[in-house]
Length: 147
Image (cartoon, rainbow, N blue to C red; front, side, top):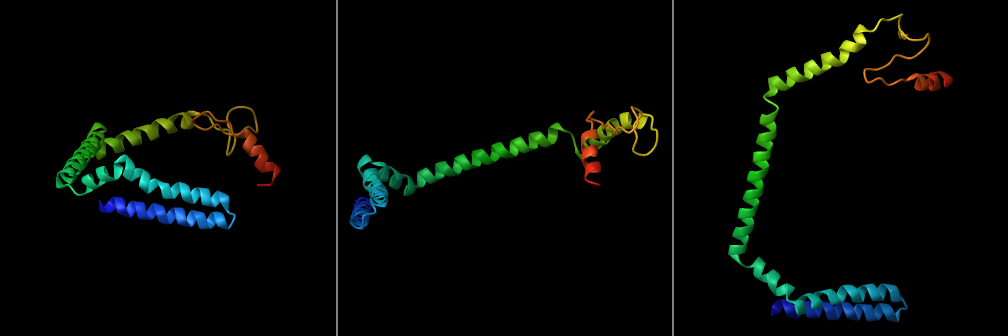
């Protein structure tokens, strides 16, 4: 009952402000204010306000929200534990990272070198990275600008 009265008062005040705004010939703003001011009374008439007040003031509803929060927390903890356990421990992850780094360095180390800054291909070509990318165009741009 009290919430209905408050919502009706807010709507009436909003409509009054909208009327004053329309009097000042700001019709677009007055229309927006009127639209916002009709929302509280619309919520009361549809019953949403009663439903919300029933949710807020019932301890059993808050207990239900607490149980849902606990469920979400347990789910998150189990997912984190699963991810942590799937990759092995810290030592296994470090060993795997070191092996991957050695594998990435192996093809570059086995390529014959003609000197600093030159690859085994045609003279003056840029070195190829481990992924097979050619940086000759970037090198040409840098040379053009004197870098």
